[in-house]
Length: 66
Image (cartoon, rainbow, N blue to C red; front, side, top):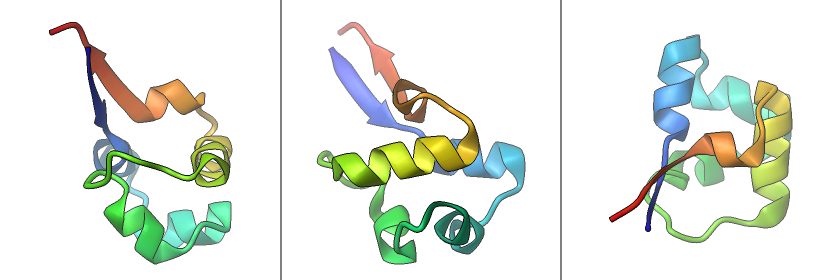
């Protein structure tokens, strides 16, 4: 199973900047900037970002069977 973060894709689709998401979620902008590059994410950040975007946590990732 391959799990790939897709936050940048979601932000681009919605026209939301990392700075705006930081304001909306309370997650530091630096953490948002590193989101798609990291394989580990703080649980509190995942839930805060998903909640701010009106998504489920699993929507922040693309899962493929490989």
